[in-house]
Length: 464
Image (cartoon, rainbow, N blue to C red; front, side, top):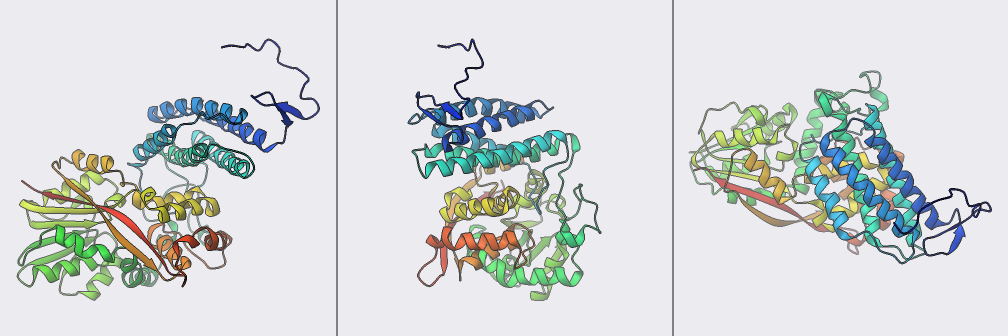
Protein backbone atom coordinates (compact mmCIF):
# COMPACT_ATOMS: atom_id res chain seq x y z
CA UNK A 1 0.00 0.00 0.00
CA UNK A 2 1.51 3.31 -1.09
CA UNK A 3 0.02 5.44 1.68
CA UNK A 4 -0.94 4.81 5.26
CA UNK A 5 -3.48 6.76 7.28
CA UNK A 6 -1.57 8.13 10.27
CA UNK A 7 -4.18 10.73 11.22
CA UNK A 8 -7.92 10.15 10.97
CA UNK A 9 -9.23 13.69 11.19
CA UNK A 10 -7.97 16.44 8.84
CA UNK A 11 -10.58 19.22 9.26
CA UNK A 12 -10.57 19.69 5.47
CA UNK A 13 -14.21 18.63 5.23
CA UNK A 14 -15.57 20.88 7.94
CA UNK A 15 -17.19 23.23 5.42
CA UNK A 16 -19.09 20.52 3.51
CA UNK A 17 -16.42 19.91 0.88
CA UNK A 18 -14.62 16.63 0.25
CA UNK A 19 -11.87 15.38 -2.03
CA UNK A 20 -12.14 12.86 -4.86
CA UNK A 21 -9.48 10.36 -5.82
CA UNK A 22 -8.22 12.60 -8.62
CA UNK A 23 -7.56 15.47 -6.19
CA UNK A 24 -10.58 17.58 -7.12
CA UNK A 25 -12.86 19.02 -4.41
CA UNK A 26 -16.65 18.77 -4.53
CA UNK A 27 -19.63 19.30 -2.25
CA UNK A 28 -20.37 16.42 0.08
CA UNK A 29 -23.86 16.09 -1.41
CA UNK A 30 -22.51 15.91 -4.95
CA UNK A 31 -24.11 13.12 -7.01
CA UNK A 32 -20.80 11.30 -7.29
CA UNK A 33 -20.21 11.41 -3.53
CA UNK A 34 -23.79 10.24 -2.96
CA UNK A 35 -23.14 7.31 -5.33
CA UNK A 36 -19.90 6.01 -3.82
CA UNK A 37 -21.14 6.78 -0.31
CA UNK A 38 -24.16 4.55 -0.91
CA UNK A 39 -21.90 1.82 -2.30
CA UNK A 40 -19.95 2.05 0.96
CA UNK A 41 -23.22 1.79 2.90
CA UNK A 42 -24.14 -1.24 0.78
CA UNK A 43 -20.83 -2.91 1.54
CA UNK A 44 -21.43 -2.35 5.26
CA UNK A 45 -24.85 -4.00 4.95
CA UNK A 46 -23.27 -6.96 3.15
CA UNK A 47 -20.76 -7.16 5.99
CA UNK A 48 -23.61 -7.14 8.49
CA UNK A 49 -25.17 -10.04 6.62
CA UNK A 50 -21.87 -11.90 6.65
CA UNK A 51 -21.79 -11.57 10.45
CA UNK A 52 -24.69 -14.06 10.51
CA UNK A 53 -24.49 -17.83 10.29
CA UNK A 54 -24.90 -18.32 6.53
CA UNK A 55 -24.94 -21.30 4.14
CA UNK A 56 -21.38 -21.83 2.83
CA UNK A 57 -22.27 -20.96 -0.78
CA UNK A 58 -23.78 -17.62 0.33
CA UNK A 59 -20.82 -16.86 2.60
CA UNK A 60 -18.33 -17.45 -0.21
CA UNK A 61 -20.29 -15.36 -2.70
CA UNK A 62 -20.77 -12.39 -0.37
CA UNK A 63 -17.10 -12.46 0.64
CA UNK A 64 -16.16 -11.96 -3.01
CA UNK A 65 -18.79 -9.26 -3.51
CA UNK A 66 -17.37 -7.16 -0.67
CA UNK A 67 -14.07 -6.90 -2.55
CA UNK A 68 -15.87 -6.05 -5.79
CA UNK A 69 -17.80 -3.27 -4.04
CA UNK A 70 -14.53 -1.71 -2.89
CA UNK A 71 -13.48 -1.74 -6.56
CA UNK A 72 -16.75 -0.03 -7.48
CA UNK A 73 -16.30 2.63 -4.78
CA UNK A 74 -12.79 3.31 -6.03
CA UNK A 75 -14.02 3.63 -9.62
CA UNK A 76 -16.67 6.15 -8.62
CA UNK A 77 -14.25 8.10 -6.44
CA UNK A 78 -11.84 8.60 -9.36
CA UNK A 79 -13.68 10.09 -12.39
CA UNK A 80 -12.61 8.54 -15.66
CA UNK A 81 -11.35 5.33 -14.02
CA UNK A 82 -12.77 1.90 -14.94
CA UNK A 83 -12.41 -0.85 -12.35
CA UNK A 84 -15.57 -2.94 -12.87
CA UNK A 85 -15.13 -5.37 -15.80
CA UNK A 86 -17.84 -7.30 -17.62
CA UNK A 87 -16.64 -10.47 -15.90
CA UNK A 88 -18.02 -9.15 -12.60
CA UNK A 89 -21.51 -9.02 -14.14
CA UNK A 90 -21.27 -12.47 -15.71
CA UNK A 91 -20.00 -13.80 -12.38
CA UNK A 92 -23.13 -12.54 -10.63
CA UNK A 93 -25.31 -14.06 -13.34
CA UNK A 94 -23.64 -17.43 -12.82
CA UNK A 95 -24.22 -17.10 -9.07
CA UNK A 96 -27.87 -16.26 -9.72
CA UNK A 97 -28.42 -19.25 -11.97
CA UNK A 98 -26.77 -21.58 -9.47
CA UNK A 99 -28.55 -20.33 -6.36
CA UNK A 100 -31.97 -19.96 -8.00
CA UNK A 101 -31.96 -23.41 -9.61
CA UNK A 102 -33.38 -25.28 -6.62
CA UNK A 103 -35.72 -22.59 -5.28
CA UNK A 104 -39.47 -23.17 -5.72
CA UNK A 105 -41.39 -20.72 -7.92
CA UNK A 106 -42.66 -17.55 -6.30
CA UNK A 107 -46.42 -17.36 -6.00
CA UNK A 108 -46.69 -14.07 -4.11
CA UNK A 109 -44.68 -11.22 -2.65
CA UNK A 110 -42.12 -12.00 0.05
CA UNK A 111 -41.83 -9.80 3.13
CA UNK A 112 -38.28 -8.76 4.09
CA UNK A 113 -38.09 -10.69 7.34
CA UNK A 114 -38.24 -14.13 8.90
CA UNK A 115 -34.80 -14.61 10.40
CA UNK A 116 -32.27 -11.94 11.34
CA UNK A 117 -29.90 -13.05 8.57
CA UNK A 118 -32.69 -12.94 5.98
CA UNK A 119 -33.72 -9.44 7.06
CA UNK A 120 -30.10 -8.25 6.87
CA UNK A 121 -29.77 -9.57 3.32
CA UNK A 122 -33.01 -7.85 2.29
CA UNK A 123 -31.71 -4.60 3.81
CA UNK A 124 -28.56 -4.93 1.70
CA UNK A 125 -30.77 -5.52 -1.36
CA UNK A 126 -32.73 -2.31 -0.84
CA UNK A 127 -29.53 -0.28 -0.32
CA UNK A 128 -28.20 -1.82 -3.53
CA UNK A 129 -31.29 -0.60 -5.36
CA UNK A 130 -30.70 2.90 -3.97
CA UNK A 131 -27.05 2.79 -5.08
CA UNK A 132 -28.21 1.81 -8.56
CA UNK A 133 -30.64 4.75 -8.66
CA UNK A 134 -27.87 7.16 -7.63
CA UNK A 135 -25.61 5.77 -10.34
CA UNK A 136 -28.32 6.23 -12.97
CA UNK A 137 -28.80 9.84 -11.82
CA UNK A 138 -25.05 10.44 -11.97
CA UNK A 139 -24.87 9.00 -15.49
CA UNK A 140 -27.27 11.68 -16.75
CA UNK A 141 -24.70 14.38 -16.00
CA UNK A 142 -21.30 12.72 -15.91
CA UNK A 143 -19.47 9.83 -17.52
CA UNK A 144 -20.20 6.53 -15.76
CA UNK A 145 -19.05 3.01 -16.60
CA UNK A 146 -22.26 1.39 -17.89
CA UNK A 147 -21.02 -2.00 -16.72
CA UNK A 148 -21.18 -0.70 -13.15
CA UNK A 149 -24.89 0.09 -13.51
CA UNK A 150 -25.52 -3.45 -14.74
CA UNK A 151 -23.41 -4.81 -11.91
CA UNK A 152 -25.60 -3.18 -9.26
CA UNK A 153 -28.74 -4.33 -11.07
CA UNK A 154 -27.57 -7.95 -11.01
CA UNK A 155 -26.32 -7.62 -7.44
CA UNK A 156 -29.74 -6.57 -6.17
CA UNK A 157 -31.20 -9.64 -7.90
CA UNK A 158 -28.54 -11.81 -6.31
CA UNK A 159 -29.22 -10.42 -2.83
CA UNK A 160 -32.92 -11.17 -3.27
CA UNK A 161 -32.19 -14.78 -4.24
CA UNK A 162 -29.60 -15.07 -1.46
CA UNK A 163 -32.23 -13.92 1.05
CA UNK A 164 -34.55 -16.68 -0.20
CA UNK A 165 -31.80 -19.28 0.19
CA UNK A 166 -30.96 -18.02 3.69
CA UNK A 167 -34.63 -18.08 4.70
CA UNK A 168 -34.88 -21.75 3.75
CA UNK A 169 -31.72 -22.80 5.60
CA UNK A 170 -32.24 -25.61 8.11
CA UNK A 171 -35.88 -26.06 7.18
CA UNK A 172 -36.85 -22.40 7.61
CA UNK A 173 -39.57 -20.64 5.66
CA UNK A 174 -40.08 -17.42 3.76
CA UNK A 175 -42.51 -14.78 4.99
CA UNK A 176 -45.26 -14.34 2.41
CA UNK A 177 -47.33 -11.20 1.99
CA UNK A 178 -51.04 -11.70 2.58
CA UNK A 179 -53.55 -9.56 0.69
CA UNK A 180 -55.50 -7.12 2.86
CA UNK A 181 -58.86 -8.83 2.49
CA UNK A 182 -57.36 -12.18 3.52
CA UNK A 183 -55.29 -11.27 6.59
CA UNK A 184 -58.04 -12.39 8.88
CA UNK A 185 -58.09 -15.80 7.24
CA UNK A 186 -54.39 -16.66 7.44
CA UNK A 187 -51.71 -15.83 9.96
CA UNK A 188 -49.01 -13.75 8.29
CA UNK A 189 -45.38 -14.71 8.53
CA UNK A 190 -45.42 -18.36 7.47
CA UNK A 191 -45.44 -20.14 4.18
CA UNK A 192 -48.36 -22.38 3.38
CA UNK A 193 -47.87 -25.93 2.18
CA UNK A 194 -50.59 -25.24 -0.37
CA UNK A 195 -50.97 -22.50 -2.93
CA UNK A 196 -50.37 -18.78 -2.36
CA UNK A 197 -53.07 -16.86 -0.46
CA UNK A 198 -54.76 -15.59 -3.61
CA UNK A 199 -55.24 -19.12 -4.84
CA UNK A 200 -56.25 -20.87 -1.64
CA UNK A 201 -58.89 -18.22 -0.97
CA UNK A 202 -60.58 -18.93 -4.28
CA UNK A 203 -63.94 -20.60 -4.28
CA UNK A 204 -64.45 -23.51 -6.64
CA UNK A 205 -66.20 -21.23 -9.11
CA UNK A 206 -63.40 -18.65 -9.00
CA UNK A 207 -60.73 -21.29 -9.60
CA UNK A 208 -62.75 -22.73 -12.46
CA UNK A 209 -63.18 -19.30 -13.98
CA UNK A 210 -59.42 -18.67 -13.73
CA UNK A 211 -58.75 -21.99 -15.48
CA UNK A 212 -61.18 -21.08 -18.24
CA UNK A 213 -59.45 -17.73 -18.77
CA UNK A 214 -56.12 -19.56 -18.92
CA UNK A 215 -57.42 -21.99 -21.55
CA UNK A 216 -59.10 -19.43 -23.79
CA UNK A 217 -56.73 -16.48 -23.45
CA UNK A 218 -53.44 -17.03 -21.63
CA UNK A 219 -52.45 -20.38 -23.12
CA UNK A 220 -52.95 -19.33 -26.76
CA UNK A 221 -51.04 -16.08 -26.21
CA UNK A 222 -47.99 -17.59 -24.51
CA UNK A 223 -47.81 -21.28 -25.39
CA UNK A 224 -50.01 -21.92 -28.40
CA UNK A 225 -47.22 -21.59 -30.94
CA UNK A 226 -45.30 -24.44 -29.31
CA UNK A 227 -47.98 -27.14 -29.43
CA UNK A 228 -47.11 -28.48 -32.87
CA UNK A 229 -43.37 -28.13 -32.25
CA UNK A 230 -43.50 -30.34 -29.16
CA UNK A 231 -45.78 -32.88 -30.82
CA UNK A 232 -43.45 -33.03 -33.82
CA UNK A 233 -40.41 -33.55 -31.59
CA UNK A 234 -42.15 -36.49 -29.93
CA UNK A 235 -42.38 -38.20 -33.36
CA UNK A 236 -45.92 -39.34 -32.64
CA UNK A 237 -47.51 -42.04 -34.72
CA UNK A 238 -51.06 -43.44 -34.89
CA UNK A 239 -51.57 -45.92 -32.08
CA UNK A 240 -49.03 -44.38 -29.68
CA UNK A 241 -49.79 -44.08 -25.98
CA UNK A 242 -48.81 -40.59 -24.80
CA UNK A 243 -48.66 -38.91 -21.37
CA UNK A 244 -48.79 -35.11 -21.05
CA UNK A 245 -47.32 -34.15 -17.64
CA UNK A 246 -48.58 -30.91 -16.07
CA UNK A 247 -51.11 -30.65 -18.86
CA UNK A 248 -52.99 -27.64 -17.48
CA UNK A 249 -56.26 -27.32 -19.37
CA UNK A 250 -55.14 -29.92 -21.89
CA UNK A 251 -54.43 -28.01 -25.10
CA UNK A 252 -51.33 -30.07 -25.87
CA UNK A 253 -53.07 -33.28 -24.77
CA UNK A 254 -55.86 -32.62 -27.26
CA UNK A 255 -53.37 -31.96 -30.06
CA UNK A 256 -51.54 -35.18 -29.20
CA UNK A 257 -54.82 -37.13 -29.24
CA UNK A 258 -55.51 -36.02 -32.80
CA UNK A 259 -52.12 -37.34 -33.93
CA UNK A 260 -52.30 -40.76 -32.29
CA UNK A 261 -55.91 -41.33 -33.36
CA UNK A 262 -58.50 -43.64 -31.90
CA UNK A 263 -56.09 -46.59 -31.87
CA UNK A 264 -53.77 -44.69 -29.53
CA UNK A 265 -54.37 -42.84 -26.28
CA UNK A 266 -53.54 -39.44 -24.79
CA UNK A 267 -53.54 -38.97 -21.02
CA UNK A 268 -53.31 -35.58 -19.37
CA UNK A 269 -52.00 -35.28 -15.81
CA UNK A 270 -52.01 -32.23 -13.55
CA UNK A 271 -52.24 -31.41 -9.83
CA UNK A 272 -54.77 -28.57 -10.29
CA UNK A 273 -58.38 -29.81 -10.13
CA UNK A 274 -59.77 -26.66 -11.77
CA UNK A 275 -57.43 -27.02 -14.74
CA UNK A 276 -58.44 -30.67 -15.13
CA UNK A 277 -62.13 -29.76 -14.90
CA UNK A 278 -61.76 -27.45 -17.90
CA UNK A 279 -59.69 -30.10 -19.70
CA UNK A 280 -62.37 -32.75 -19.14
CA UNK A 281 -65.08 -30.36 -20.31
CA UNK A 282 -63.19 -29.64 -23.55
CA UNK A 283 -62.34 -33.30 -24.24
CA UNK A 284 -64.49 -35.65 -22.13
CA UNK A 285 -63.32 -38.68 -24.11
CA UNK A 286 -59.70 -38.40 -22.99
CA UNK A 287 -58.20 -39.66 -19.74
CA UNK A 288 -57.41 -36.98 -17.14
CA UNK A 289 -55.47 -37.80 -13.96
CA UNK A 290 -54.96 -35.70 -10.81
CA UNK A 291 -51.41 -36.28 -9.56
CA UNK A 292 -48.00 -34.77 -8.91
CA UNK A 293 -45.29 -35.17 -11.51
CA UNK A 294 -42.93 -36.48 -8.84
CA UNK A 295 -45.17 -39.49 -8.16
CA UNK A 296 -46.78 -40.65 -11.40
CA UNK A 297 -49.58 -43.19 -10.87
CA UNK A 298 -48.44 -45.52 -13.67
CA UNK A 299 -46.30 -48.63 -13.98
CA UNK A 300 -42.92 -48.87 -15.65
CA UNK A 301 -42.65 -48.63 -19.44
CA UNK A 302 -46.33 -47.81 -20.07
CA UNK A 303 -46.05 -44.96 -22.61
CA UNK A 304 -44.58 -44.57 -26.08
CA UNK A 305 -44.02 -40.85 -25.48
CA UNK A 306 -44.07 -38.43 -22.52
CA UNK A 307 -44.31 -34.70 -23.12
CA UNK A 308 -44.20 -31.73 -20.75
CA UNK A 309 -44.26 -28.13 -21.85
CA UNK A 310 -42.95 -25.23 -19.75
CA UNK A 311 -43.76 -26.90 -16.42
CA UNK A 312 -40.43 -28.41 -15.32
CA UNK A 313 -39.44 -25.17 -13.58
CA UNK A 314 -42.57 -25.39 -11.39
CA UNK A 315 -42.05 -28.87 -9.99
CA UNK A 316 -41.07 -29.15 -6.34
CA UNK A 317 -38.37 -31.69 -7.18
CA UNK A 318 -37.36 -31.45 -10.83
CA UNK A 319 -35.00 -34.42 -10.81
CA UNK A 320 -37.61 -36.72 -9.30
CA UNK A 321 -40.18 -35.51 -11.81
CA UNK A 322 -37.79 -36.25 -14.69
CA UNK A 323 -36.98 -39.69 -13.23
CA UNK A 324 -40.70 -40.47 -13.07
CA UNK A 325 -41.33 -39.37 -16.65
CA UNK A 326 -38.41 -41.50 -17.80
CA UNK A 327 -39.57 -44.47 -15.74
CA UNK A 328 -43.00 -44.68 -17.35
CA UNK A 329 -41.47 -44.65 -20.86
CA UNK A 330 -41.03 -47.92 -22.70
CA UNK A 331 -37.60 -48.70 -24.21
CA UNK A 332 -37.39 -46.72 -27.43
CA UNK A 333 -39.94 -44.22 -26.11
CA UNK A 334 -39.51 -40.47 -26.55
CA UNK A 335 -39.37 -37.86 -23.78
CA UNK A 336 -39.83 -34.23 -24.88
CA UNK A 337 -39.61 -31.34 -22.40
CA UNK A 338 -39.86 -27.64 -23.23
CA UNK A 339 -38.53 -24.81 -21.03
CA UNK A 340 -38.07 -21.11 -21.68
CA UNK A 341 -34.63 -19.81 -22.60
CA UNK A 342 -32.92 -17.18 -20.41
CA UNK A 343 -35.11 -14.07 -20.41
CA UNK A 344 -32.02 -11.93 -20.97
CA UNK A 345 -31.85 -13.29 -24.53
CA UNK A 346 -35.12 -11.49 -25.30
CA UNK A 347 -34.73 -7.68 -25.14
CA UNK A 348 -38.47 -7.20 -24.73
CA UNK A 349 -38.76 -9.69 -21.87
CA UNK A 350 -35.70 -8.26 -20.14
CA UNK A 351 -37.10 -4.73 -20.44
CA UNK A 352 -40.43 -5.76 -18.91
CA UNK A 353 -38.76 -7.50 -15.96
CA UNK A 354 -36.47 -4.52 -15.29
CA UNK A 355 -39.45 -2.17 -15.40
CA UNK A 356 -41.40 -4.38 -13.03
CA UNK A 357 -38.50 -4.35 -10.57
CA UNK A 358 -38.42 -0.55 -10.64
CA UNK A 359 -42.17 -0.01 -10.25
CA UNK A 360 -43.39 -3.01 -8.23
CA UNK A 361 -40.26 -4.25 -6.48
CA UNK A 362 -37.85 -7.16 -6.60
CA UNK A 363 -40.39 -9.74 -5.44
CA UNK A 364 -42.63 -9.09 -8.44
CA UNK A 365 -39.69 -9.07 -10.85
CA UNK A 366 -38.33 -12.30 -9.41
CA UNK A 367 -41.74 -13.92 -9.87
CA UNK A 368 -41.69 -12.99 -13.54
CA UNK A 369 -38.18 -14.42 -13.88
CA UNK A 370 -39.23 -17.79 -12.48
CA UNK A 371 -40.49 -19.30 -15.78
CA UNK A 372 -37.00 -18.67 -17.19
CA UNK A 373 -35.05 -20.18 -14.28
CA UNK A 374 -33.85 -23.13 -16.38
CA UNK A 375 -32.81 -20.95 -19.31
CA UNK A 376 -29.15 -21.85 -18.90
CA UNK A 377 -28.32 -24.89 -21.04
CA UNK A 378 -25.84 -26.05 -18.40
CA UNK A 379 -28.47 -25.95 -15.66
CA UNK A 380 -31.00 -27.69 -17.87
CA UNK A 381 -28.62 -30.43 -18.87
CA UNK A 382 -27.56 -30.75 -15.24
CA UNK A 383 -31.17 -31.41 -14.21
CA UNK A 384 -31.41 -34.27 -16.71
CA UNK A 385 -27.97 -35.61 -15.80
CA UNK A 386 -28.93 -35.51 -12.13
CA UNK A 387 -31.99 -37.60 -12.95
CA UNK A 388 -29.81 -40.18 -14.68
CA UNK A 389 -31.07 -39.19 -18.15
CA UNK A 390 -28.06 -38.84 -20.42
CA UNK A 391 -27.53 -38.19 -24.14
CA UNK A 392 -30.06 -35.36 -24.18
CA UNK A 393 -30.58 -33.32 -27.33
CA UNK A 394 -31.30 -29.62 -26.67
CA UNK A 395 -32.55 -27.40 -29.46
CA UNK A 396 -33.26 -23.70 -29.00
CA UNK A 397 -36.08 -22.32 -31.13
CA UNK A 398 -37.91 -19.00 -31.54
CA UNK A 399 -41.58 -18.15 -31.38
CA UNK A 400 -43.25 -14.80 -31.89
CA UNK A 401 -45.54 -13.51 -29.16
CA UNK A 402 -48.20 -11.02 -30.19
CA UNK A 403 -50.40 -8.77 -28.06
CA UNK A 404 -52.97 -6.14 -28.93
CA UNK A 405 -51.26 -3.52 -26.74
CA UNK A 406 -48.54 -2.98 -24.16
CA UNK A 407 -51.17 -3.24 -21.43
CA UNK A 408 -52.42 -6.57 -22.82
CA UNK A 409 -48.84 -7.84 -22.88
CA UNK A 410 -48.20 -6.88 -19.26
CA UNK A 411 -51.51 -8.23 -17.95
CA UNK A 412 -51.09 -11.53 -19.80
CA UNK A 413 -47.63 -12.23 -18.44
CA UNK A 414 -48.43 -11.15 -14.89
CA UNK A 415 -51.63 -13.19 -14.72
CA UNK A 416 -50.07 -16.29 -16.30
CA UNK A 417 -46.66 -16.31 -14.67
CA UNK A 418 -46.61 -14.49 -11.35
CA UNK A 419 -49.85 -15.40 -9.59
CA UNK A 420 -50.15 -11.74 -8.61
CA UNK A 421 -53.66 -10.44 -8.12
CA UNK A 422 -54.06 -7.58 -10.60
CA UNK A 423 -56.64 -5.01 -9.61
CA UNK A 424 -57.20 -1.98 -11.82
CA UNK A 425 -56.47 1.19 -9.91
CA UNK A 426 -53.89 -0.30 -7.53
CA UNK A 427 -50.98 2.10 -7.29
CA UNK A 428 -48.20 -0.35 -8.19
CA UNK A 429 -50.05 -1.59 -11.25
CA UNK A 430 -51.02 1.86 -12.48
CA UNK A 431 -47.44 3.04 -11.96
CA UNK A 432 -46.23 0.09 -14.01
CA UNK A 433 -48.63 0.91 -16.84
CA UNK A 434 -47.70 4.60 -16.82
CA UNK A 435 -44.00 3.79 -17.07
CA UNK A 436 -44.63 1.12 -19.69
CA UNK A 437 -46.17 3.65 -22.07
CA UNK A 438 -42.73 5.17 -22.58
CA UNK A 439 -40.29 2.45 -21.53
CA UNK A 440 -41.82 -0.38 -23.59
CA UNK A 441 -43.20 1.61 -26.51
CA UNK A 442 -40.22 0.56 -28.63
CA UNK A 443 -41.71 -2.94 -28.86
CA UNK A 444 -45.06 -1.71 -30.26
CA UNK A 445 -45.83 -0.80 -33.86
CA UNK A 446 -47.65 2.32 -35.05
CA UNK A 447 -51.03 0.75 -34.23
CA UNK A 448 -49.95 -0.07 -30.66
CA UNK A 449 -49.69 -3.82 -31.22
CA UNK A 450 -46.75 -5.59 -29.57
CA UNK A 451 -44.75 -8.44 -31.06
CA UNK A 452 -41.39 -9.92 -30.09
CA UNK A 453 -39.52 -13.19 -30.17
CA UNK A 454 -39.14 -15.45 -27.16
CA UNK A 455 -36.87 -18.49 -27.25
CA UNK A 456 -37.38 -21.91 -25.74
CA UNK A 457 -35.19 -24.97 -25.26
CA UNK A 458 -36.72 -28.25 -26.46
CA UNK A 459 -35.11 -31.30 -24.85
CA UNK A 460 -35.63 -34.60 -26.65
CA UNK A 461 -34.51 -37.99 -25.36
CA UNK A 462 -35.00 -41.53 -26.68
CA UNK A 463 -34.93 -44.12 -23.90
CA UNK A 464 -32.50 -46.97 -24.71
